[in-house]
Length: 230
Image 1: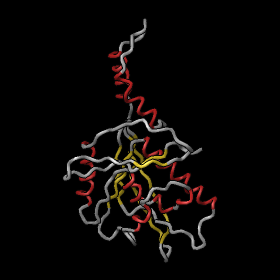
Image 2: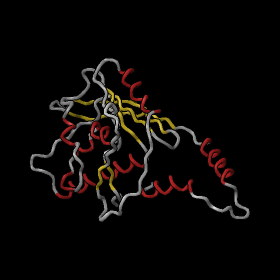
Image 3: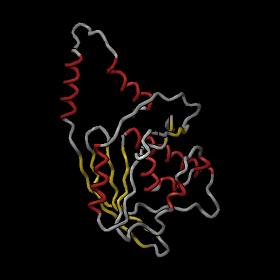
Image 4: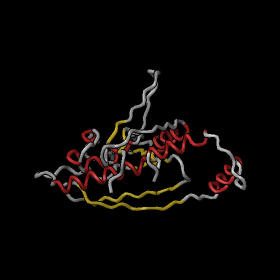
């Protein structure tokens, strides 16, 4: 997987003028070769079923969906349903080992979503938004150290917010919700930068993009971990 630094290097590389070595393809020939390889990449689709128990009555809930892996590039993941349960902190608290494990999972998932250029969206119909549809807001603050890590930081709507997606509904027009999500596919900018060296593994940095148009809302990845933990 590419780091932010490597991605920035790749983005600026085409602007560098290099002398063509004898026997090497020209820049145009190399570009055409890359395009031919890209055109051969096929999409992949797979159905899945997610079953879990939740609530006081231990009711079994099943969610079905389709995973579509498209060609390399920006990807929109639209999740239909309330998502997985938001697990509360144990009454006696987490052990240090549990919190470190939670933190590792948060760093790994956040990094994977960013490097895969995935933006997550949440779509829900009326009556299917979960027991507390705003509970996720308690977990939106950045997780900077393992001491801040909780399982709620991996909630669906938390990931939606942190990847720059949109939380839609609940209402009875699911098709309209999905259409509003897909409108984002053609309205985005790609910005890169070379971050400072990290002082330690898993160092968190905020990202904020502002524009000088008060009538415009900007959504983007809210932050990143500079180095993925082993």
